[in-house]
Image (cartoon, rainbow, N blue to C red):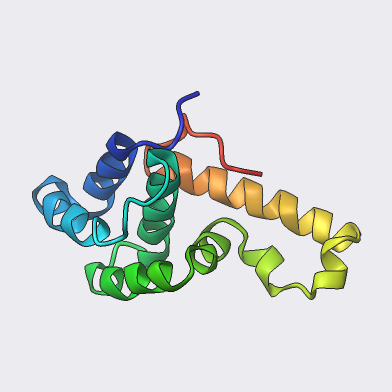
Length: 122
């Protein structure tokens, strides 16, 4: 399995927006700062792509949201059910079931955009 890379983000951008628009999409995504690892930046950018649902108009706001707190973008993209649960429920059976559903949903999305070689962060 490969990890989160720039090449993966570029490939998913081309899948979602078309090859001719993927350069413009990457220009927008690159406004998210490269302050940590390549894998961390690519993971956040991939989350932004997922949350955009293929709508380029959403990208700038999602990048701004990631700038503010990248965890909000990662949570919404990778852990949507868990994000809706109260903290006490996360430690109970419902939290475990939500975690499994979130993981399955994210894996399905990765597969649908041709990125099934990536293992989501659990």
